[in-house]
Amino acid sequence: MTPATGQLRPIDTAAVPPVLEMRGIAKRFGATQALEDVSLTLRPGEIHALLGENGAGKSTLIKIMTGVYQPDRGEIRLAGKPVTVGSAAEGQIHGIAAIYQEPLLFPDLNVAENIFVSHQNRGAVTNWRQMFREAESILASLGVALDVRSPARGLTLAAQQSVEIAKAISLNVRVLIMDEPTASLSAHEVAQLFRLVRDLRSKGVAILFVSHRMEEVFQIADTVTVFRDGRLISTRPAAEVTPQKAIADMVGREMGLFQRRAAAKKGEKLLAVRGLARAGVFEGVSFDVHRGEVLGFAGLIGAGRTDVGLALFGIEPATSGTIELNGAAHVIRSPRQAMALGIAYVSEDRRQLGLSLPMSISANISLPVLARYLSRLGLIRTGEERATAEAFRKRLSIRTPNVDLAVGKLSGGNQQKVMLSKWLNTRPALLILDEPTRGIDVGAKAEVHAMIGELAAEGIGIILISSDLPEVLAMSDRVLVMREGRQMAILDGDSATSQTVMTAAMGQEMAA
Image 1: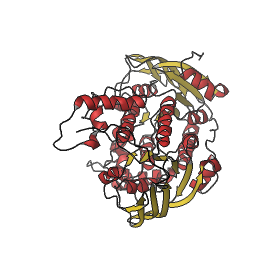
Image 2: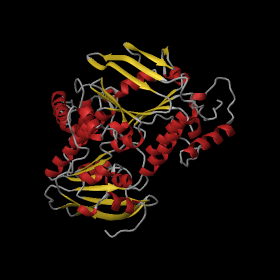
Image 3: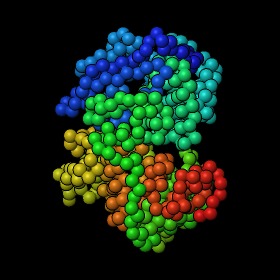
Image 4: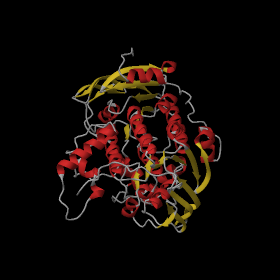
């Protein structure tokens, strides 16, 4: 394995006006027309945003561009010449690299090996010292500090995404596709990434940027294209598009970015946490959650928000502090115990902790409470199981031909909806939502937000952990801010603003 230098060769924009053209692309999967007569042009030195709801065809087009799928009709032109991209390896040869929403690392390879895995040459002798040095150099350009000699297993989602980005940069890319690259990154890490993206643009790299975060799209994009239902709706310079107009194109109607949730009537105290800590991870966390209340958890990546959620659900139990539920003290040591107490946890990592991808939608939804669907003989009452799944399919608008489909065949946003359904099916009193709208399009976000409001109105206590600050502010009655494992503030009502939350998150002590 002999790694490349990671340096990108500038492209002569005058010689090749469009670097990649997708013309009249069509793709069908069974009865589903995923793409129909779609065209897209990427130019050197351009950041081109691609927007659309889940199921709009974005992922299908990306997979055609990278050789994972072959189009039924249409033409791909690279630097003005027709090409066939028959595989991901051929896509890399053409200088097309992609960073997907879900990191795809080899857990038993070290970080450097994961970065340069696409450079492997059979029979070549690996220059480990050079590989480690160049891996460190690429990560340093991202502002990321990782031990390149350590295995990828155990890396956080943010660290995994950083390695994926470094992997793409290690190739001499002409077209870089970024599919939700910031979904697991903090605001500081997003700023670092955007500096790098702009540097790549200055070198003539064409960048296709896919994101559901509107503020990011209009911060970075030069051009905005919108897909809806597998068709091209619009392509405009970013300066001529507003977020509201883009959303209207995406969903076929006008829609606000974030509708502030109407506060539900707060009931009696459901959860009381005092001095909760996990040694070496977080400490001194104290808060209450009432029935019908949404308590938002804000903070930068690594602040410890998720760790508190894992402790409450018994996945990584607390080592000190107290947890009271309905006035009774409990020491929660396992998810089974937490579920018995009426606590449900929707993980941010749906692939590893949230879903069984080979299993059907209905099987996933029934899994936590499978005993509910067993007959006296121990057989699953599949009709009842399907009926439950069908009810959630309608309630959350899960796009699927039937509930017997394997979850792994759904788009990321629809997988997220299945995971929400799975835990709602446990009928929880306390629902912990960890990044519930990560990778979900604006239409689905609105549906999830509406569902959160409905659940709160039903008297469920909700802890909302989200790196999307506008979402936290719009959905929460109060906001708890964390930094580096410590609770910095609890902000009520109008005192919770972007400025006050970020001030606390960046390290200034504020009164609770």
